[in-house]
Length: 239
Image 1 (cartoon, helix red, strand yellow):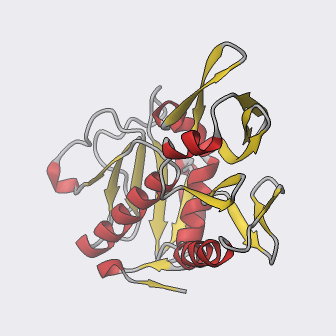
Image 2 (cartoon, helix red, strand yellow; image 1 turned 180 degrees about the vertical axis):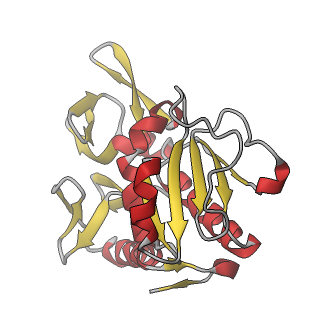
């Protein structure tokens, strides 16, 4: 994903850029996020996303290829929610009321993930004699099995002979967590946690070990605080 960000102030632009890079890191997406100002002239080439502040510049920037093939997804921001009505004619992929909330950013960008599917980082596993490339975004949880590991994605289960410990070593620590001796979960897809299990975005419940529960709770709590806050200049977030 190559995204350009224009906000009405440098502080807002910096905050949104940081949030987009953080989101990309969590979903394991290769991303380049560029702050951009209309005074720079035409937009950078090969954009796949444009974040545009309607407060600072209601009109789209020069060089924005409206209606053309390969047009970047347009995401609009405004301090007044009534601006969402004015944005309909521009067919945005998303509208954010300022200050942008991480939860809204996450929901909207996840809905558009297909536009950046080729940029998602992948893990390669051997399955039935074939090598499979699995986007890490789509890997919800993994369990140890009698013959190696069983990977659970949003639409299928994939059996590989690779032991869970070896597979865990190849997954990014910031995105995947060992919640029990025989289970790994995607932090991004974690939705809730009980005394005995973690609930995932697809409804699956994954067991939590007693020894791991404290670290799992802390990781989930930090993530919930992150997604629940609003982006503010200086990197601060409020609930």
